[in-house]
Image 1 (cartoon, rainbow, N blue to C red):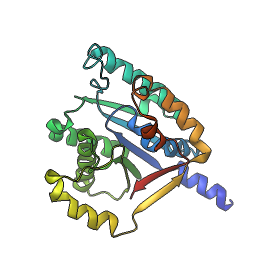
Image 2 (image 1 turned 135 degrees about the horizontal axis):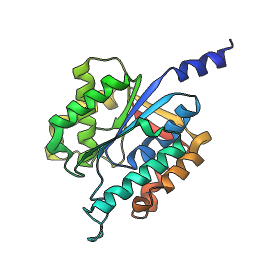
Image 3 (image 1 turned 60 degrees about the vertical axis):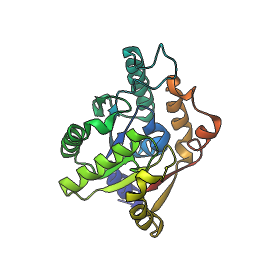
Image 4 (image 1 turned 45 degrees about the vertical axis):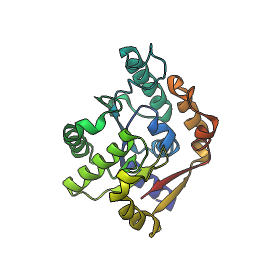
Length: 228
């Protein structure tokens, strides 16, 4: 068997697990990487941490059951485009914007999923992401990996730029040492899968209409960037 065939077989034997705070973060942050891994035959699982109920500025939508269901349907449609099996999708349904209040229960659920899936790779939002659900997701996943003492490749990504203000000073020095003083950034070329990512992103109609062009431009390039 040639080198390329060996690589394809190796990738097909891999399993990737992605923890997304909200329905759309997975596509924004690593949609191209998801499509690439699925195209190689790799098994990919997605976990949505919150229910997304507050993902609208409109009073008649914000906090409604209808918005929760809409975002779930959008997620299923987007992930189908990216090649994810419906059985590989978890909705944990913690309250949007308040994941930090459910850290203990969320940690138990995350650990159970990791033990069930047995991933080789885990993607998650950075623990210094400016959005509280994003940073909390990063904290929970990192803690779960540590508690389980497993050897997995970790990919963290940022959706919202970090705010290293007074309350973050306890982590900022540690962050600077661990992320900036070592070459731990991986840039992935997703040009071959960009169109798939864009089609998946279009399914999140309830969300993308609120995004600025500047914000979207960060996630619609030929590259995805991760801290590893």
